[in-house]
Length: 112
Length: 113
Image (cartoon, rainbow over all chains, first blue to last red; front, side):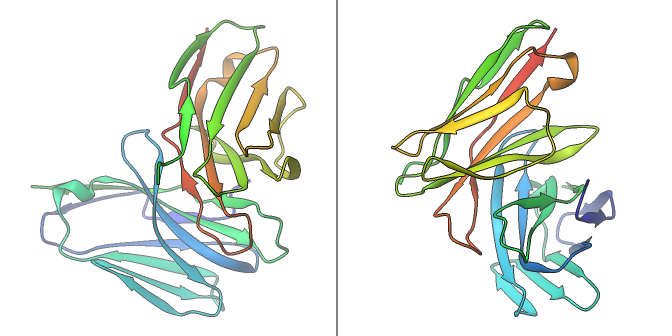
């Protein structure tokens, strides 16, 4: 079963706009990671945020984590056509089982 | 460093056959995890190996098995293939300690006819 669910399932924006996608999960976690996947290819790691962190930045990416609400958000600022992809969150359970559970993904389309 | 490599990239099999997929992790990484991705079920965890030992497994039938060699390379095997096994199979490597980033390979796309 899925640990995380991304919202929205699909998002279409114009180049230059910001894109925000959310991830909710069910159980306590050690960390949460965001990945990008282009057209059924391998996943590219974007950012890892630990359970004791609230916000993290990497270039045009900003990730927040609210462990009380069991949710995370990924913000991509000044989006580009090359950002068109599916975005997934992944969580590892706090029990340290070395098992990552992926969310359902958000399909982002950036229109030029 | 070279990334995670997976072979073959594409594979077509028929029902009842078996298949072996291979994954070479990033140099120095000792953990390899396998995932199955389908449109209906999304990304699902199959199993994880660390230092030749399976540390965890997901909820897949026994037809799905794997192993890891002393050089950390890993193979997964699916026996008695079913149509529903058609999927993108992804492997990911990491150092193997907690809270480590997983790096994914390009995947093997398996089609079962």
